[in-house]
Image (cartoon, rainbow, N blue to C red; front, side):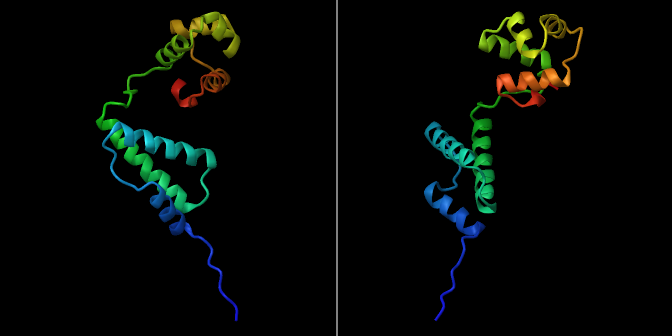
Length: 139
């Protein structure tokens, strides 16, 4: 007699993840930190299937809701490429000269910071890679 072997489906993965870390609204800093740890672990592992993807999407929305209500989200609507660049430079203690070596040239960076020139696509790519941010920050 043959037995049928059942392969794990998307629903099975989702339920297994829910058993490990239930999907619930986040109300405390501790719950927020725990949810971020789970999301971090899953992002490092990569999305295995549709069930994992659904779980990550749902948990991410709960984290986003908590962060919005707790005032943890940054308001980026008025952010320009220059203000983002100035902030990132200050955060890392970079001078115009140091940033010029990363992005192309000191003169070009000076012109960008003064508003006389726009960032080129290649500069945006290098800056995004160096600062570990999305290139969209500089658009």
